[in-house]
Image 1 (cartoon, rainbow, N blue to C red):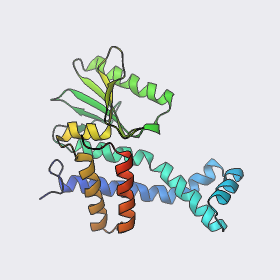
Image 2: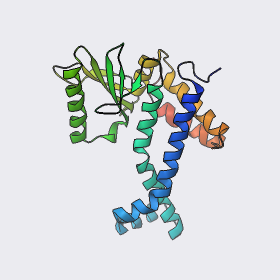
Image 3: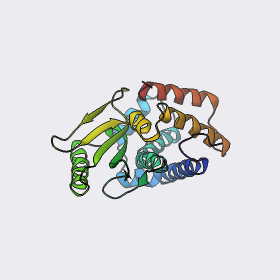
Image 4: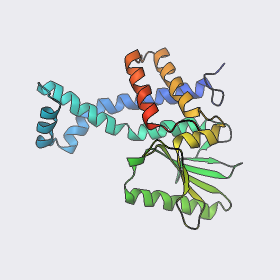
Length: 221
């Protein structure tokens, strides 16, 4: 029996494995990324003072961790894209947008966090969705924000003349899977896969991450 009834264990484990690998790559590439971007000595000084870092090694580790997290942004968006495209009827389009469902006539672009896009990038994304709808007449388009600015469910039209909507991740997961708790169930299943496949998450860390989830992901209606 699968952990979730809307995606096979094989597909989910594959998505988690890819995410873990990309996270590892981001960690490995962090020192190179820091050198390439040039280290800010003023920032280093303030970070060391603010967080009471006592050694240069601790400071370097903190800078590398921050760089690795920055490098993981796209990986997390791709994780959700892969998971959602594994649900029956949905495919990973991965061209001018991320997902589509031929039967429901829906296409979607998935972003991991509300601050992933600046205003210019956001306009470009909406323009790409608008262009797609010019070809796919009678379809709807969604800009999916997995972690919204506020932990509230919403769906709002963001284009005056086209059926282009912005929607939070929890609501979109529910619409795709038919399960109100789909994104929460995915989080729990991901922890289980990490623990099962040798990437153990310590219980206290797991509890902390669960609290973060409860704080920033919209609750079930």
